[in-house]
Image 1 (cartoon, rainbow, N blue to C red):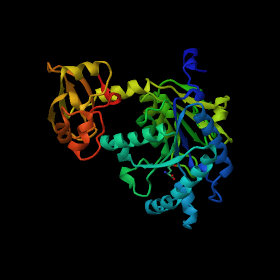
Image 2: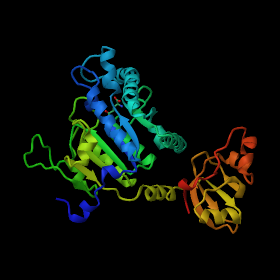
Image 3: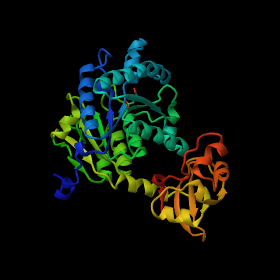
Image 4: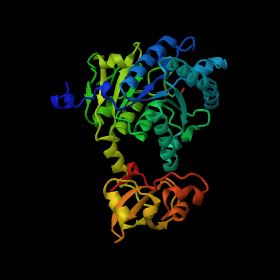
Length: 377
Ligand code: GLU
């Protein structure tokens, strides 16, 4: 049993502000026939619709493209080569996305396909693009359906498993909860198949070496991830301020089951997502410096974004998404943040009002030079 104070911190699924749900291949695709489990998917859509109706932003990270595509192409059973997996993913991903679109539409929910590679979350510029696109989709009420872009991702630049991908997506968009739905209902102290004394943990407050040692190797035939990748995902998610739950996905309406007390393991977040993100920004080494006037300095102190109009000088060479230091008129460091323009663009628009940006840049600008969400004052 977890001590009382830990149980009190266990998140409640229905209170999620922004929820990422990872769906493993084994849940969606029948291992024998290779067919999509439509009843299960329809029931999941009900859970998603309910969460959306409560005001929760929902993002699905779904596996299944390879499992769905391999049979269509007549590929043999067993392990596929990388090229075969990529071909299978190309065929299966269309079907996967269509399945989500069809199952969410009756609830008035628009599905959006987002295919990402490791680079899209590790490269800062592409990370900002990914985040901006997801934010826009969520603000428009859509449900992004995310998968790795398996067709083009080669081994070196690949997550390979959607557990870690889902954790990265969760922290990229500042989600407060991540649910990993698969064929296991939690983290056990040992292998429950071979060790009769193995028991499931209700709550993991910190990922210690003991917890890591409990994670065995992959078990399921279809899924790439095992308990190891799930614990690695938990490390990423909780370190970024996102709570994570491992729960059995196979019951119809698996989220409702968790909400009603089905067995699962919760990993508690180490921090609030915003705090964790700001800590991440604060720790970066700056590539350039932006000097601002007294008006802009006062605005930053009030928690506002940095607009080009208040900039008096731009120093250094940087790209979009790079960390910069923001200095006040007296030269003292005011803030640190991720800049939304290259240094050349920043110089071109410094001192300009926001409505003049399009003319200077030749394209509609992105408003703030450093957005307040990307800034630590
Ligand atoms: N991206 C892979 C697919 O859609 C699955 C990876 C995984 O199972 O974790 O088939």
